[in-house]
Image (cartoon, rainbow, N blue to C red; front, side):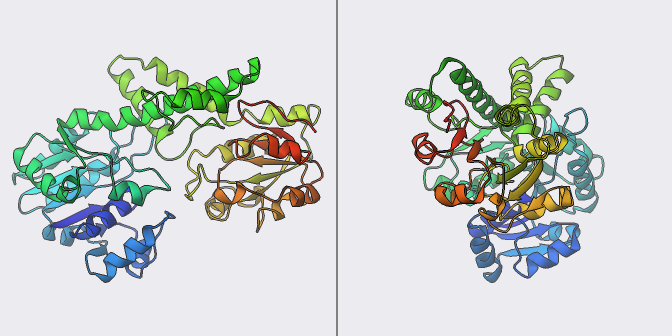
Length: 437
């Protein structure tokens, strides 16, 4: 099948490459000429493990194409996926201007029946709005479908090729049949395709992400309480997760959630609720707790240094919001850097993958180290903000030699407590006892 993907951001590029891998001819459209030219030459514009191999394979097999010409791609394709940004506005609501602008363009350009598939995360009722916009531009028949993505950054290729389910919101039997054919390679292997109405499909994405945000935040609350009463959150987590009604995933405490999805989707669902005179009280609490959780270790650093960190050199390991991505959107590292600088500290950071994105944002406000141990040179403390694998088994003897103080503030609970204790470090993590030298 011939398919057009409008938008080559994270979702669009992974979706387009996956659909090409499934045997379709896929035309990826983007307005950024430089980006499109780079992709034509085999340059993947995002960092995602294992994506480049699949990307190059499908370019070489002539199943994956890139262009700035929407009309040309539209004419070649029966199915058009919209994978456009829906950034939060100042009030938290999702900005649909990109989606609705492309819908208007499609209405003006289409000459025969199309299925318009909304892959972007959008508020309930967006399919109706897209339908109205296109209908105002043409009398040619078409269908609008909701098909939300459930990709984890860092595992997107795995998730796209082995999804737990495919959710499709469609009221047209013709559109359902077309979507069934697209995802037949999945259903042939037992992966379910769940059909529902468009509004339920749109809400499914928001509900899923918001629930996971609540789960993470609840565990962070439990971790903070563990510290008050002397319990160990690692043991509590194992005990809870062994209940198959709860499960082990998303129970790891830390310095809050970030990224492109959870913060944005929680805000958008809260705002959507208010528009219907409904208050998502749990989500409002989740947002408030997460905001505080992100910088919960700063007060601990101040306490360690007797109340002030002015003039202290803080080494930071990790800048991405999570491991295996270069995404720094809503990253806890940025909140902590801002507060550390505000309090007069100096920050030297290391992140081999996300450094470039932070430099674009912060410039020379902080220093950037070439290696994880280089960041520690004469540092007063080490702050771990991202759980990159290279940080999991460091040389503690070398850490001690590099730093002024043997003090680690671990926002991701990277180490069993006995390891920093055996190496003579002051070690503060989340939800566990503090190790004093």
